[in-house]
Image 1 (cartoon, rainbow, N blue to C red):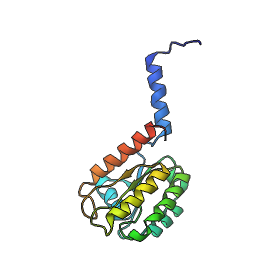
Image 2 (spheres, one colour):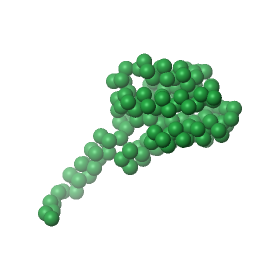
Image 3 (cartoon, helix red, strand yellow):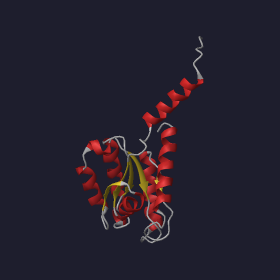
Image 4 (spheres, one colour):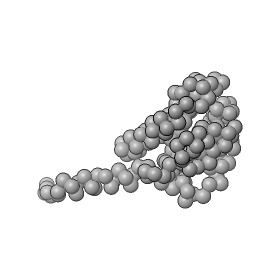
Length: 167
């Protein structure tokens, strides 16, 4: 076996390029969904499409109408609408599939403990996130987080960690 002596800086640059190309694109974060997406847009200055009271079927409709170029390579923080219609939390699976087909990296938000049956809803969303291979972020009190920047930081860190593992 032949060894090549590459400078360390070249190896580091190659590794950084690999991770940059295989994972979420820094600075291309979008919030899509219900009032949690509105909170991320307002408090964290994210672009995207959020609406208070939006249900899962309506979130799916919005995703289907977004131009694919807007989603390709972006990290989408998805609030599925399950807070507003817990019985249809399963629609998140279709939402994620559409986003991934458009080339987005997705992070799924759960529901807060102010939502009816929040534990069962979060268990269902956790299963959906696991099946689709995406990060899942939850754990705030009430319906809405009090610290949206912290939620965003955890979501983006989770997406970067997942990308670093090659998923």
